[in-house]
Image (cartoon, rainbow, N blue to C red; front, side, top):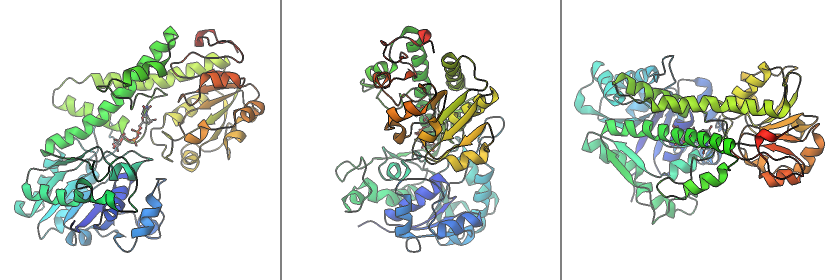
Length: 472
Ligand code: UGA
């Protein structure tokens, strides 16, 4: 029988809100705290504020029963056994993670600590943050024996956040005290025992009653490093495959074949080997910079990470020159842009390579008609509509009269577009695909000139040939 635990989650961003709702889903009583009154009011009324599969359904199921929202951190602290800190750790100017929100929350928690509580760092933080949180709380006059600070990093991805949380590859608990480790083990017991997966309405995913996720207990410092190292390694994998895709372009090889051949080696694995226009989002760019900065601060040479960043930046520039190769000049050209989010199935545009490219293309004097299935509102707030930049209601409206169509985000719906219709709508049937969503042969059969990443370009009704020989 799993125990119901009183949990507070501080911060209702991607990590905080998803964790709060999922803790309710596995049987705990949750209070989610945010200092933004408007956010709290929206969440209380059932608005999830972010585009995330399963989230509306779970929020509706538990709202006002197993999950409530408040701005009162003191009250939430007093009524909870475990307090998860899931506030933002943005990048500061020198690349370090800005921990001022974490510190402010730790100090506020300290003011309400009167009985034993476990404070859990869920935000992505550099090594030693656990120690700093502990110090901040002690400096506020709290006796050491009435609290512990645990590191419990989160590995969810935007777009699949709920199922990633409930079906994790692993749960990492960095704890330097047995009491704290036991409480965390009890919180995750519905997952680690497999009990959750036996429920008839459990959210589906990779874990089952017989293959539940493992819980790895480590020191607090190891847990902190695991999170940064995992994100940095995934970013490295992407930059590596992007560099290999450039080699493929230079040799007329095919990156899809190369990535498949590499990924079949179980030591390498097939995931995160998709080439493209570089990684973006609120995590990889910030976390690679923060991890590099941690290494610098400790006098450890980790210049490998600088190369990872360099390849990522140059990938966008390469795409821009690919557009130039196809169109010759960009001034006055009408470009259809499909995708603005940093990846498919999310409305998030933070550090989106698609947004960066739109800015670069506008600066070169082209005019753009853009469409994204979910990120248009956010994109318009960042890049307001103008005579040079129009936002339209679907991919077909974007393609109308375009000199070329650029695919910048890997939305599933783009892969199933009616290619014949797109072709007849465009002024010139040229597609430049930054996400390798289409099969070059199919594009050729549909009469397109098609350029993608790390694969030979094709012209209509001609044999496969190299990007270098494309003449438009
Ligand atoms: C990432 C990690 O994948 C999560 O494990 C982690 O918990 C999260 O950061 C975080 O630290 O909060 P996320 O930023 O949601 O998750 O997105 P990813 O799916 O990892 O994609 C990141 C970027 O890499 C996107 O721009 C995506 O298009 C790009 N990408 C990903 C590629 O270019 N190629 C790939 O093969 C995979």
